[in-house]
Image 1: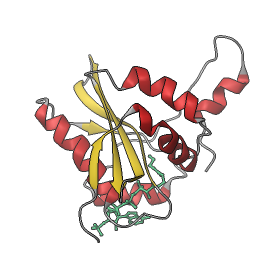
Image 2 (image 1 turned 60 degrees about the vertical axis):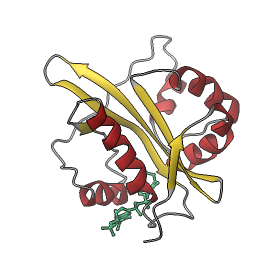
Image 3 (image 1 turned 90 degrees about the horizontal axis):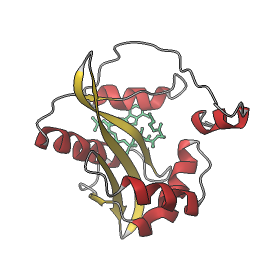
Image 4 (image 1 turned 180 degrees about the vertical axis):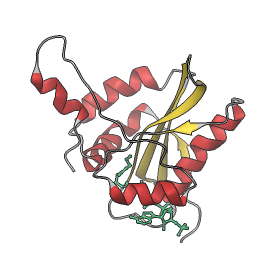
Length: 159
Ligand SMILES: CC(C)(COP(=O)(O)OP(=O)(O)OC[C@H]1O[C@@H](n2cnc3c(N)ncnc32)[C@H](O)[C@@H]1OP(=O)(O)O)[C@@H](O)C(=O)NCCC(=O)NCCS
Protein backbone atom coordinates (compact mmCIF):
# COMPACT_ATOMS: atom_id res chain seq x y z
CA UNK A 1 0.00 0.00 0.00
CA UNK A 2 1.29 3.50 -0.85
CA UNK A 3 0.95 6.68 1.24
CA UNK A 4 -2.57 7.74 2.27
CA UNK A 5 -4.12 9.44 -0.77
CA UNK A 6 -5.42 12.97 -0.48
CA UNK A 7 -9.20 13.21 -0.22
CA UNK A 8 -11.25 16.41 -0.42
CA UNK A 9 -14.80 17.59 -0.91
CA UNK A 10 -15.77 17.49 -4.58
CA UNK A 11 -16.20 20.68 -6.57
CA UNK A 12 -18.41 21.37 -9.55
CA UNK A 13 -15.26 21.64 -11.65
CA UNK A 14 -14.59 17.92 -10.95
CA UNK A 15 -17.71 16.96 -12.94
CA UNK A 16 -15.78 15.76 -15.99
CA UNK A 17 -13.52 13.44 -13.98
CA UNK A 18 -16.42 12.25 -11.83
CA UNK A 19 -18.34 11.40 -15.02
CA UNK A 20 -15.33 9.49 -16.38
CA UNK A 21 -15.06 7.44 -13.20
CA UNK A 22 -18.81 6.89 -13.06
CA UNK A 23 -18.58 5.23 -16.46
CA UNK A 24 -16.07 2.81 -14.89
CA UNK A 25 -18.67 2.14 -12.20
CA UNK A 26 -20.93 1.00 -15.03
CA UNK A 27 -23.16 4.02 -15.53
CA UNK A 28 -22.85 6.12 -18.69
CA UNK A 29 -22.74 9.76 -17.59
CA UNK A 30 -21.80 12.92 -19.46
CA UNK A 31 -19.87 15.73 -17.79
CA UNK A 32 -22.86 18.06 -18.16
CA UNK A 33 -25.26 15.59 -16.52
CA UNK A 34 -22.73 15.06 -13.72
CA UNK A 35 -22.42 18.84 -13.25
CA UNK A 36 -26.20 19.24 -13.20
CA UNK A 37 -26.60 16.59 -10.48
CA UNK A 38 -23.59 17.76 -8.47
CA UNK A 39 -24.97 21.31 -8.47
CA UNK A 40 -27.88 20.00 -6.39
CA UNK A 41 -25.98 17.43 -4.32
CA UNK A 42 -22.96 19.51 -3.24
CA UNK A 43 -24.85 22.25 -1.33
CA UNK A 44 -26.81 19.71 0.74
CA UNK A 45 -25.90 19.34 4.40
CA UNK A 46 -27.28 15.80 4.60
CA UNK A 47 -25.03 14.55 1.80
CA UNK A 48 -21.29 14.57 1.21
CA UNK A 49 -19.33 13.90 -1.95
CA UNK A 50 -15.56 13.45 -1.74
CA UNK A 51 -12.91 12.78 -4.35
CA UNK A 52 -9.43 11.25 -4.01
CA UNK A 53 -6.51 12.84 -5.79
CA UNK A 54 -3.08 11.68 -6.85
CA UNK A 55 -0.76 14.31 -8.34
CA UNK A 56 -3.76 16.68 -8.66
CA UNK A 57 -5.71 14.13 -10.74
CA UNK A 58 -9.07 12.83 -9.51
CA UNK A 59 -8.76 9.04 -9.11
CA UNK A 60 -11.86 8.14 -7.12
CA UNK A 61 -15.07 9.36 -5.54
CA UNK A 62 -17.52 8.43 -2.81
CA UNK A 63 -20.99 9.80 -2.14
CA UNK A 64 -22.53 9.52 1.33
CA UNK A 65 -26.09 10.49 2.22
CA UNK A 66 -28.02 10.55 5.47
CA UNK A 67 -31.35 8.77 5.75
CA UNK A 68 -33.73 8.14 8.60
CA UNK A 69 -36.30 5.35 8.46
CA UNK A 70 -38.86 4.80 11.15
CA UNK A 71 -37.91 1.14 11.45
CA UNK A 72 -34.17 1.68 11.84
CA UNK A 73 -33.44 5.28 12.82
CA UNK A 74 -30.70 7.39 11.23
CA UNK A 75 -27.89 5.96 9.13
CA UNK A 76 -25.57 6.92 6.30
CA UNK A 77 -25.80 5.24 2.91
CA UNK A 78 -22.90 4.98 0.52
CA UNK A 79 -24.61 6.05 -2.69
CA UNK A 80 -21.62 5.25 -4.88
CA UNK A 81 -17.92 4.51 -4.71
CA UNK A 82 -15.37 4.03 -7.46
CA UNK A 83 -11.60 4.11 -7.83
CA UNK A 84 -9.92 4.53 -11.21
CA UNK A 85 -9.23 1.10 -12.70
CA UNK A 86 -5.51 1.91 -12.98
CA UNK A 87 -5.22 3.00 -9.33
CA UNK A 88 -6.90 0.18 -7.43
CA UNK A 89 -5.38 -1.80 -4.54
CA UNK A 90 -3.41 1.20 -3.24
CA UNK A 91 -5.67 2.16 -0.33
CA UNK A 92 -7.72 4.80 -2.18
CA UNK A 93 -11.09 3.09 -1.67
CA UNK A 94 -10.28 2.60 2.00
CA UNK A 95 -9.36 6.29 2.37
CA UNK A 96 -12.64 7.39 0.76
CA UNK A 97 -14.66 5.08 3.00
CA UNK A 98 -12.77 6.37 6.05
CA UNK A 99 -13.81 9.88 5.07
CA UNK A 100 -17.45 8.79 4.94
CA UNK A 101 -17.17 7.00 8.29
CA UNK A 102 -15.51 10.02 9.96
CA UNK A 103 -18.33 12.27 8.75
CA UNK A 104 -20.87 9.77 10.05
CA UNK A 105 -19.26 9.80 13.50
CA UNK A 106 -18.93 13.59 13.52
CA UNK A 107 -22.68 13.87 12.94
CA UNK A 108 -23.29 11.65 15.96
CA UNK A 109 -24.48 8.69 13.90
CA UNK A 110 -23.00 5.23 14.11
CA UNK A 111 -24.23 3.14 11.18
CA UNK A 112 -23.04 3.12 7.55
CA UNK A 113 -24.98 0.98 5.05
CA UNK A 114 -24.68 0.20 1.38
CA UNK A 115 -26.23 -1.96 -1.28
CA UNK A 116 -24.01 -3.63 -3.84
CA UNK A 117 -25.05 -5.65 -6.89
CA UNK A 118 -24.44 -9.41 -6.59
CA UNK A 119 -22.12 -9.26 -9.59
CA UNK A 120 -19.64 -6.95 -7.82
CA UNK A 121 -17.94 -9.79 -6.02
CA UNK A 122 -14.59 -7.99 -5.76
CA UNK A 123 -16.22 -4.97 -4.14
CA UNK A 124 -17.84 -7.34 -1.62
CA UNK A 125 -14.41 -8.57 -0.57
CA UNK A 126 -13.28 -4.95 -0.24
CA UNK A 127 -16.24 -4.06 2.01
CA UNK A 128 -15.75 -7.14 4.15
CA UNK A 129 -12.07 -6.26 4.53
CA UNK A 130 -13.22 -2.88 5.87
CA UNK A 131 -15.46 -4.56 8.43
CA UNK A 132 -18.82 -4.44 6.65
CA UNK A 133 -21.12 -7.41 7.27
CA UNK A 134 -23.36 -8.99 4.65
CA UNK A 135 -26.73 -8.85 6.42
CA UNK A 136 -29.29 -9.72 3.70
CA UNK A 137 -29.96 -10.31 0.00
CA UNK A 138 -32.64 -8.29 -1.75
CA UNK A 139 -34.47 -7.76 -5.03
CA UNK A 140 -34.44 -4.27 -6.53
CA UNK A 141 -37.79 -2.92 -7.81
CA UNK A 142 -38.23 0.11 -10.05
CA UNK A 143 -41.36 1.59 -11.67
CA UNK A 144 -41.18 4.23 -14.38
CA UNK A 145 -44.18 6.50 -13.99
CA UNK A 146 -43.76 7.46 -17.66
CA UNK A 147 -43.88 3.81 -18.68
CA UNK A 148 -40.44 4.35 -20.15
CA UNK A 149 -38.36 1.19 -19.85
CA UNK A 150 -35.26 3.24 -20.76
CA UNK A 151 -35.47 4.66 -17.23
CA UNK A 152 -34.55 1.26 -15.82
CA UNK A 153 -31.12 1.47 -17.42
CA UNK A 154 -30.26 4.30 -15.04
CA UNK A 155 -30.29 1.77 -12.22
CA UNK A 156 -28.65 -1.17 -13.98
CA UNK A 157 -24.85 -0.90 -14.07
CA UNK A 158 -23.12 -2.21 -17.19
CA UNK A 159 -20.41 -4.24 -15.49
C1 LIG B 1 -14.16 -1.60 -4.73
C2 LIG B 1 -13.13 -0.52 -4.96
C3 LIG B 1 -13.75 0.86 -4.68
C4 LIG B 1 -11.95 -0.75 -3.98
O1 LIG B 1 -11.05 0.33 -4.08
P1 LIG B 1 -9.47 0.12 -3.91
O2 LIG B 1 -8.85 1.45 -3.85
O3 LIG B 1 -8.97 -0.81 -4.96
O4 LIG B 1 -9.40 -0.63 -2.50
P2 LIG B 1 -8.24 -0.50 -1.41
O5 LIG B 1 -6.91 -0.56 -2.10
O6 LIG B 1 -8.48 0.68 -0.54
O7 LIG B 1 -8.46 -1.84 -0.60
C5 LIG B 1 -8.85 -1.86 0.78
C6 LIG B 1 -8.80 -3.29 1.25
O8 LIG B 1 -9.72 -4.09 0.47
C7 LIG B 1 -9.02 -5.15 -0.17
N1 LIG B 1 -9.47 -5.27 -1.54
C8 LIG B 1 -9.63 -4.29 -2.44
N2 LIG B 1 -10.03 -4.80 -3.62
C9 LIG B 1 -10.10 -6.13 -3.44
C10 LIG B 1 -10.42 -7.21 -4.30
N3 LIG B 1 -10.74 -7.00 -5.59
N4 LIG B 1 -10.39 -8.47 -3.82
C11 LIG B 1 -10.04 -8.70 -2.53
N5 LIG B 1 -9.72 -7.71 -1.65
C12 LIG B 1 -9.75 -6.45 -2.11
C13 LIG B 1 -7.55 -4.72 -0.20
O9 LIG B 1 -6.72 -5.84 -0.19
C14 LIG B 1 -7.42 -3.90 1.03
O10 LIG B 1 -7.14 -4.67 2.17
P3 LIG B 1 -5.76 -4.47 3.00
O11 LIG B 1 -5.57 -2.99 3.13
O12 LIG B 1 -6.04 -5.13 4.28
O13 LIG B 1 -4.73 -5.11 2.15
C15 LIG B 1 -12.55 -0.57 -6.41
O14 LIG B 1 -12.12 -1.88 -6.68
C16 LIG B 1 -13.55 -0.18 -7.48
O15 LIG B 1 -13.68 1.00 -7.81
N6 LIG B 1 -14.27 -1.17 -8.06
C17 LIG B 1 -15.20 -0.92 -9.16
C18 LIG B 1 -16.41 -0.13 -8.71
C19 LIG B 1 -17.17 -0.82 -7.60
O16 LIG B 1 -17.41 -2.01 -7.60
N7 LIG B 1 -17.59 0.02 -6.63
C20 LIG B 1 -18.40 -0.44 -5.51
C21 LIG B 1 -19.84 -0.42 -5.89
S1 LIG B 1 -20.87 -1.06 -4.59
